[in-house]
Amino acid sequence: MNKDEDWITPQALAVELDINASVIYGWITSTPAKIVFKELGQGEKTGKKRYLVDKSTRPPLRGRGRPA
Image (cartoon, rainbow, N blue to C red; front, top):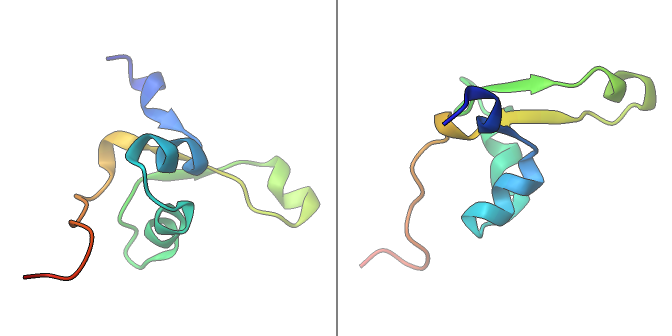
């Protein structure tokens, strides 16, 4: 797999993993960061931050629902 193909938007990764995009943004804003990301420059002008995330560095997902 090409390394450039690993970089996608948080929304696209959320769709791919079938989870809410807020989980991806939580990984970005957590300290230390749970996922490798790049902040895109055009977000600085509009005041809205935009990111690309490296989907190969995502943390493992927990199962849905209550733990047994």
